[in-house]
Image 1: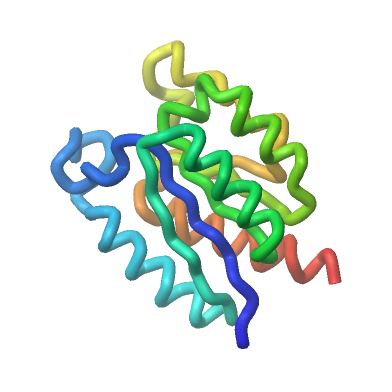
Image 2: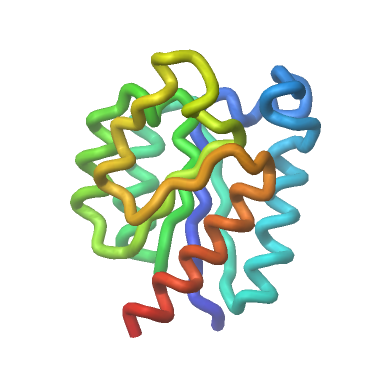
Length: 148
């Protein structure tokens, strides 16, 4: 059985494909999930792909993923800019965590420039649209191989 990577998605990502496609692209979250599963298979991973609009649920999933996975890719969406709880949850996890965003958060509104969770993760990928997820999977593959 392959090792599992959790791909966690924050608020409003369930509206991808409809919500501001000029910023976030036209792919739905289901499209991105299919892309991730196909790429993960090539990399030798299984994917546990989840989305919630609730911060506490995401924190619970981070704790679960820390116990059940070899790595975590997280698109925290707006919670990345505000969530100390997610920052603290990530600090308690020993598996590598990669933060990702569809848009380039540094080219957007000032309040999006700072990520509260970035100091707790191994790296941040942003600005490549749906491809940000694929890049995060490759980063996790590299990180998990280095830890062996």
